[in-house]
Length: 468
Ligand SMILES: [Zn+2]
Image 1 (tube, rainbow, N blue to C red):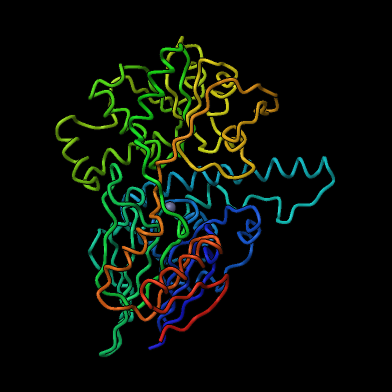
Image 2 (tube, helix red, strand yellow):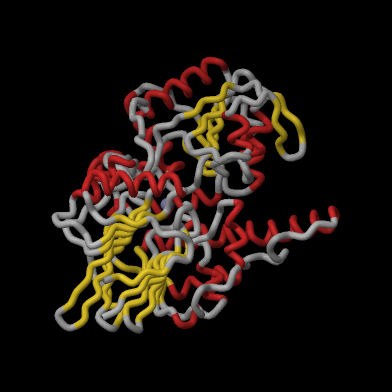
């Protein structure tokens, strides 16, 4: 028995998750993500390390773009096997892939025009990485699996999906390779959530594994949970209402938007805030929210009881889902106070830009950030306190109140990751630390070694290893 693994992404960086696992003649790709860091984006255009037609199956941990975003290219380039994932992941991934294809097409068009005008050349071709048709072509290959029910990949290889508690439908994948009397268990953590988060369950723990591939997004940090998220949101809504302004929330479409609604619902039920008009102004968030609605079986205990008592969380009073662009524009004609949750999360595109234009120079309005703001984004410039920002080609004075809520995180921190590993009853043969910036991954690797004495490696891009 020979098991080989090749790291094709998320190796000393966060995005582009792709692990190629080969057990004898069976080839599997665990995740097929898009590179999103500017310095690595060109890798999205590289040919795959092996012909896609030679890969037997894709095992998909969850629907975030950095885990599923390169599937349309894999399929276009010849992959014909099944893409195994949970039903919720398959439904959300399809929404996200269609959106991504649209962005790829718009981006290519924009770059082509700009480069022509400026006489420059792009480091990668000015044609879309993939199109809507390419995205749609992968949908028939999605094969839905249930948590904890093993699927047979062939040649003694078996895969089982377990709840990762990261986003709805997210999984930790356990691969079992068996030959004669020999057996190896390999765990792919995907992204691991945190205990006690709203809506989703806690991450599954395991007592046995021979090899573990663990994420390390926050491998060098400990979340400070001193913030009471619900109280902060309540304070923002009440004070902004008193001032007569609006609350604008730039938010990611998957999980974060639904979490914000969850807290608002609790505040309304407790009577901490009065009823107000809330707009979920993101067609993608609205579509994803409807996936949440019909996958109530995935909710944690608290949320399940909540749904029993109050019907659906997402039918809260005052909530309106803006679909068309017209409906979105109409929000700005409503005399406040209103709350608008809109994408994109870092204000790099989407409808939130129009709401910022209408509110950023109003001292009575509040811009409430609930997610990470990467360097160089409009969101980052606003949270960094710039007095003037450029939105849609125009300059605006920042006079609105800017509030940042740090407590939201869908990733386990250093201590939570170590606790998750420590559930293993015997030391694994080796732990591989992936899905983290070099500093974070190495720091977490050292920490695990120090705390457990286990053998730990931090692989680099394109490294190949033989297990055993
Ligand atoms: Zn993720």
